[in-house]
Image (tube, rainbow, N blue to C red; front, side):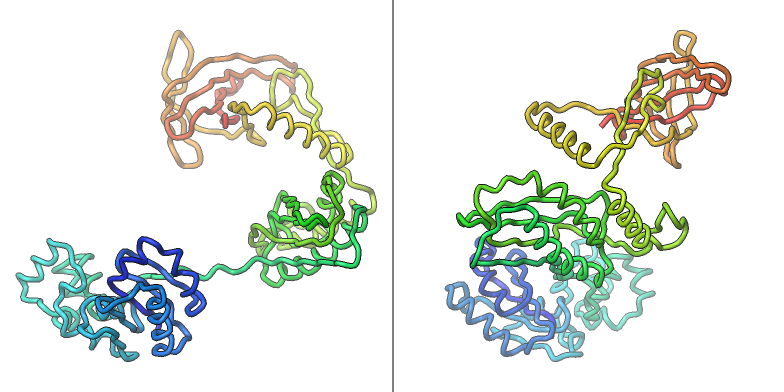
Length: 434
């Protein structure tokens, strides 16, 4: 038996949270759907579990003589048993769902009005009358909706009453009562041990963490939650500890720490991605990450930051130079704090790493070619309004450039930035505003 269906439990429909908690101590999943309540009985003794569920309803005064129960291997048989069987509790034997449905009128399957009229005209009154037909006969005469009804009449119910069970994400914790820690270096030692357990669990699942939360329990019985995000999903302990060392120095603890809990907030699959630095084309991401981690541990945490110039072209205006990771984090925190203080929202220009060539149809306006539509990656976009051209030119010989830029409003994509290279007449998508 897989499904327990209860009918006419209207009280639960208005207050589902009140009774769901005690029911979940009996069955793994419960779902309220109008005047129906579904319970998942997979792997449980049907009769004993049904009685326990009914007793739970009775204890909350949520069940009376009008409430009926249906227990079956398929959802359609359980629902018909709960709605239309004269008994208060109906058990459908395993493998006999189709036989159970056979004597019921076809109306118990809730066909739409047009299909019901068509079934009346063909003399199909009972579920057995429809079930004995072949799929080809039903599809030719009744169409797709008739095939769906035919499957239900045969107890071939593919509906997913319950979704898949979510897997618990890895977590680890450690508490101590004999002493309290105040120094960040000792906290890093404890967090490193917790990350060891969490990363092993992630590797066994073939996943990497994208975001984690470190909860610090303090001696004054309060808790500080500190979220940390990685640029890409990883199960590497070394990579996470580099982020922790940068972040832990910025956490201010109003009291000593007596416990730490490490929770994974979101994960992503790591299998199949290639290490695009050392071994393009092979699944060597973990090896590349480990090698980079060892280099950073040996040479120090080194990052890059942009240095801007006054070059007329945005894609040539920025040069990346090496700088310590600590300095980058300091600037990032200052920038984030300034954004939170300002509270203002604005569109930001997002540039593609390299301008992408596109095909454009144009029309003439005051002697200039103005974009009307453009096609990018197999999709055509209609341009509602185009402001421009903004002409930029300069340079010499191989470094020469001459571009006509247009700020275009697109119906489906917002505001995009296009330009025409006047040297060869090619059009490019340079970015968009977000």
